[in-house]
Length: 377
Image (cartoon, rainbow, N blue to C red):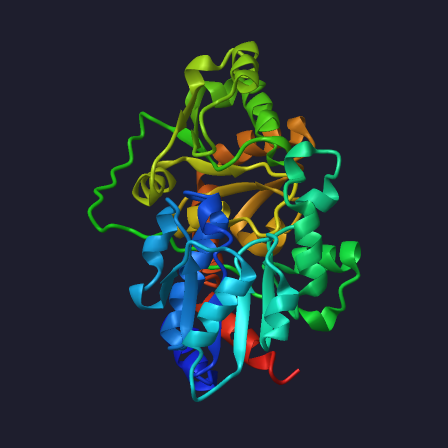
């Protein structure tokens, strides 16, 4: 189905006078990031479907604010529920009192206050990392707030069936209270890029955070153990901040200092890397969804990915899989796959087919359907 058809269906189904308010929680927490991208694209899409869409915007430096239509932005210094509810009440359509509050992250926002004010409450759960890896300190921030939000929300949107299953397992949430809505995968292009592939500068691309379950160190180790890979390729790690001392020490120990580079940038730079990389490598041990493989597929970049978490669910036939817990298997799959030109070309085509299923317009249309059904369930 084409994007325009998803929008037409959503417009047809939408009450178009449902009041939808998106919370301010995520914007001060990130300058970039997948969650911010999701809400930037979602709010923009919902605003195109439903005229009474509003987003509370506190002071922030978040890059994805620019995706939001000016007309739906509510500048708000206050983060207290009582003040946000007062503002929301003044914005509510006079023709329809049916209203949604969709929190954009886990915080001390009181869903009970919104419920008392007559709002249906929604939260999106992206993954259950803190629950699956409780021993890892990096997974613990906001864990209690997350639990409170999950328990008290009227409805929960999960971004994959894997996340839905994990949510039901860890929190015993009734299935009827959960909807699965997949993410989109398109990046925003400036239209000013000239992309030329340099066959003399072959590289493997890694994108995003690298610590813990992201399994970047095992990827480095697998690469370093292969004379074939080291003779032909470099590694470019995009985003995720500069290498820390532990990573630098490992890179030195593996003797690949001249083979690994970390770079930062915006969507244009990332698109260029996806378009020119020999392959995208995704070694994560767990993902609630995993946008980077789909982004890579959008730009004809072959994907070699972990077989863990939601990754096979989302990537389908568009990726070549390895056992992310095995350095030897990761190395062998990379060597075999990257040596097979016909296979890589076939995976590009499979990738195009797969990623066409994930668009931000479909995400918005499916989410609007969830909102409307909240008043029928």
